[in-house]
Image (tube, one colour):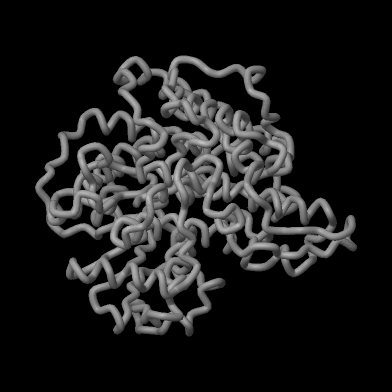
Length: 481
């Protein structure tokens, strides 16, 4: 039977709204079971975790405040904040009090039954420096790239991260980090697991030091140097391993894992879940760092084919995956990344409408469900053992300790993604969507779901701060030092 487009769109919208109601009801049901808020640390004792999970603001914004104590049963009313949440503000027009208020509001929302939404991160994106400059107006205003990295343009100081981020722009500095680690451990194994979004991050991670280490990438059907691979356009859905003859103990792996099975039996039998289960059970030694991204494929697949069941199937997936991640997180560092947000101007017509309905809103409630399961799971996990392979290096932030074990949620990259999207929107509204900058790998404005090179670069920088700072003896005040 043929269904009119208008009717179908209405049905889809209704399904999304209904899904949102179910999610809020589900999360609200678990609210009474949450433990009371524990004590919090001082700002100057910012943990390495604050580099990845939005936790607070730099001390210069709140010099006399501790980390915000969440009132998880209420909200800060909008009239108490001086920041205009949806205004397209210039970075210099939002002061420290506004940033502190925006972060506090985000923490309240993120820990609430409904969870945070994309617009809760918008004020943080608004205070980030732009990497584009314009001369003139309209199509005559040729854009100029003013910086290749947003963290670099900010001088290593993001307004919502309470520590300084080392840029690691020089490949030699990354190589020095890996050498320092391998000087006192036999191997360094970094594992990326996820779909094409994580594959781009895997390649960007390798590219940072390829000029020094000349990586060889092993595919199922052969080996190529990284320089031979068209990493910016490669769409192979295969597993890969990268190594360097110059550093024999270094291994960087990628497992293509869409997490898109819709039946519980198939979920448990998938390659990605089986691998997580082996690490969780101690049948195999886990990597030193696991970077994982999921929800993107399963959301899109189910919303297109079976959106009426998306809520229950998403919960089934979280029930299977999250406990495994908790167990692995007591043995090794586990980071689960938020999804880069949808670029609505990259598509047209019905495709754009679909993106508006199923893009950011779907990510919002999918991530809220994940965080709910993450909180519930952390209450039922046994305390981690302090006897491990790296007991002698208590300051090594790749080694989980009692106070920071488990799964780290990576949402500090989300404002970076939104800032990139805003620049794509700026180009589009100026009539510059045919300018080479618009379609470049740097911004990827024509790609609706993947982050551009500028955001990927900053994500790699954050990962390198985790891996490197504690072994290189970075100065006081840097993240993960």
